[in-house]
Image 1: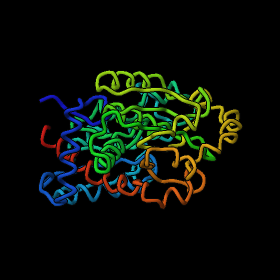
Image 2 (image 1 turned 90 degrees about the horizontal axis):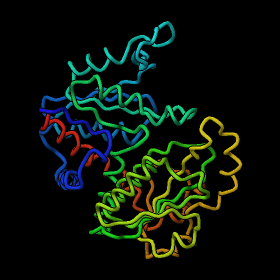
Image 3 (image 1 turned 90 degrees about the vertical axis):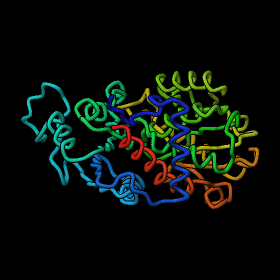
Length: 335
């Protein structure tokens, strides 16, 4: 049987994603199961986490499995990922050994590894995740690298719970200010899943420099064509918000400024008004608001928006538990 990973939703058909969402909904109704009985997952965190770690550990437990959490460079050896590297620096072992050894111990491997924010041409190769997928002999799950497919599924499940059919609903993915340049992973993923669900998607950002990587823009255009939705880019706040059914907020750094963040900072600072507030939400079609969390209140969104009935960020966060159980159960059953 061919080894199946969960690295990107672009590797999955719409029917397969719908099936995962249906299974997640079933786990939400009935949390306990035995799908992972006698099974285990290694969760490797190269970056910090709260929701991802908690939901995967508990998810494995609730399905009868066991999770082992590792932080390479902290409580596990630093790992080398370059082929042909002369390992005379900080790294102690190569991914070629790490992935294969872990594959002898566990049934699944999860990897969380953020970009380095120096050179996007390097970061977009997603080398850490790709290396685990290359060398592992068990399924690998993306816990967030340059995309965040688990967050995508949690988001989609929350939207379906509140809106029902998502076809041609107006969906606004809006950039928001943050004092630091952040990963584009969740923005990339929101673009992918919203277009995969056939929504009419508007990417709202301050300037063309904040448009997402062309790889994900092209995936989104293809998804929209295939699923009967649409995709447009806007720099106009009022027209983007008007009539929206969903507003999804995320901060991200402008890709042309990777490694030169001091130059990008002035643009970011000039666009603090992209904060999601009551006036903007009043333009929507009684729209829902969400965010992947963590969220800096009164920077990305106001207290009034976060505390309003329209905010489904907590529902989305809860759904991480359910969708990840669906992913783990699916991969184990097909491996």
